[in-house]
Image 1: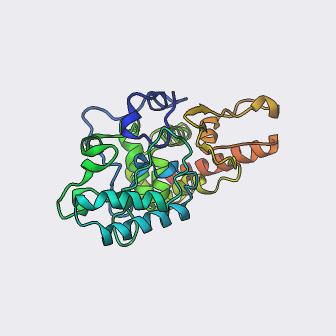
Image 2: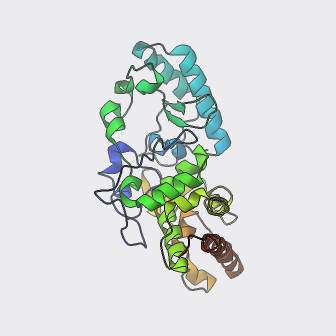
Amino acid sequence: MPFLLYTPPLIARSHPFHGGGPTNAAFSGTMPDEPFTHLCQPDSRKSCGACCGIYNYADSSREALAARLRRRTERFRNDVRDAADLPAFSGMIRAAEDQTRRYEVIFCCEYVGFLDGDEKRVGCLLHPAQNNGKGLREISFYGRELCAGHLCPSYSFLSRMEKLALIHVMEDWYLYGLCVTDVDLVKQYFRHLADLLGEIPPAERFREEPVRTIARRFFEFKLHWPFRSPEVNRFGRFYFDGAQHMIRPIDYGALGCERSGFDGIFLSLTSEFRTPDELRDAEDRIQRNITELAGALRASPDFR
């Protein structure tokens, strides 16, 4: 079973949406002796709030989420002094914001906001680091223990190279959260690249230009893929209907085409093709990016 693009703690172990490994790819995840790589808050330039449900709002565009998180953060800083203020804060936020969700089972936490004045990192406003060492997470829906101890599937199923390469490439909380939690997209991309190169490139190469920019252009397809389905209840490969979810496969037969070698990537990009020409155009866009990236990596004197 493929992954959801975000994995709330309470259903990560019990719900079928979160129970499997990457599709169309052999397991190649974290090894037991690897150094720990922090994906939630990797550096000062970005972070991920996907498990808090931020991408589960019906309108989860960058503009809508940024405005939502900005208002929450300002109100939290102005109105919350200790735990006694939190019920009023929660009620105010839930009354003021549109609570329409894509998927009813996934909770959207009202306590996620911006952690810095530059709005580069999102995260928990109840965390001790945001409250002079005072922990307030006990009052949240998930509670302190689950919030502190939960690790999404990306920690297990992405290899250390994939994790670090993605961290080196990204400088944007919104795009980073969409991509780091999409295990299939990340693994498919780096698998196609390794197949073309004949080897897995070291993660450090993704700090360099133009490698970094080329790779980022691929992941930016998440933001402006021209073949994205317009349905609001689509997210990645999944289609939502209340508390139900299902994979929405691409009907290649209706197009008179064979299943694409980039099918996993197309599903993660919520693709919908109306004609064979659109499918070929999409394949060309992905292939050009991978070929350009492989060429940039080969151009390095360190390439063997």
